[in-house]
Length: 481
Image (cartoon, rainbow, N blue to C red; front, side, top):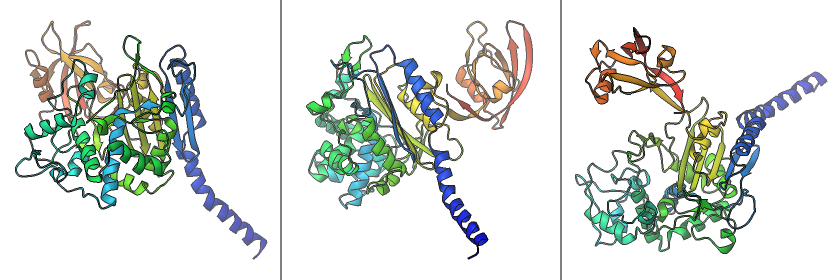
């Protein structure tokens, strides 16, 4: 081989191997993003009894960014091994346990749940259709978020005192409003029931399943439900609204819906396996839990401002979060009391984010989505994450003085913003129909009545006493509010 040909061959080999490395570097979190996290933590957790740990996983490796103190009777700083209560993130473990049981031949996704319950329990049906294990894992059983037989003086007491006996009584007395498997409705009791039948089928308890079938294979040695003395010493202390110490909740029948404790370092192993960064025997099963099956438009009706779950899998969701080009993001939030957690990953770029905190004035979920979306982490998006919306781009209500429609908020970069709308303007007419005397709901119908992407509004500026007509065209825009 000539020198020229040799040089060309070497260059080809270098370029062949350089391309994947360049892609990995491009998909990995940058040093600038890491510095942004450090600055955010420094600015928000200097003089507070709350703490936070943010952790990143990518092809460069894992990075952990802690801030704050344990506040558990010691003066120790939090770190990647600090223990937090992760609440509903536990549901992703429960869904994975079902897929594992299917892989072992112990259960089948399309089997009726009733097959695994005592014969004395009457499982509800609708139109002759039974609730299957898959319907529980995908929140499609038709159950409400919580049953109507929870009792207690506080929300904490209602959750902590909910027993298997109460769950059985709920099942035997509940009437389904629709056919199972037709619609997503987030249900704590449904996921609790799934974990319960998994334990019944395998002849053990839920915690043993989590530890033996998920944590040990992934070497997650600090993840469990019942804390040992050594783990208690590493537990970050939560606080109630008055600032008093508040320990994690202790659940009974609801344990599979949200009772796991873990650390950032352990959850990095979990999210890395989900993202395919550190493949294990569980990774193929994890991929099956990530298959999107529904699109939620219901959200949590009892939680104002919650939004929707978006595209939903087993039990991962995308929450309607903005999906930047080249990304496919899934995550799950959890928490109770003063403990808040979020775990998410990018299926395409193979990145993961973990956020754990005891702070009540920020959202672990908003921070997690923002980092996964590769957007700057600032105080504003520490409470609201970016969503991509198709619409006109303004919020409205009724003006009490004139009884006409009032623009209350205009979203940046939206069609309304680009057309010059601002809060405080009155919408006198929608497509030449007066809004005076109509309800907000009736006006909402007018805004989309003709099915056209365009809508004509007659606006009044009450301060300048000017009237103007604009035509808006519905389109996509990002919002974090």
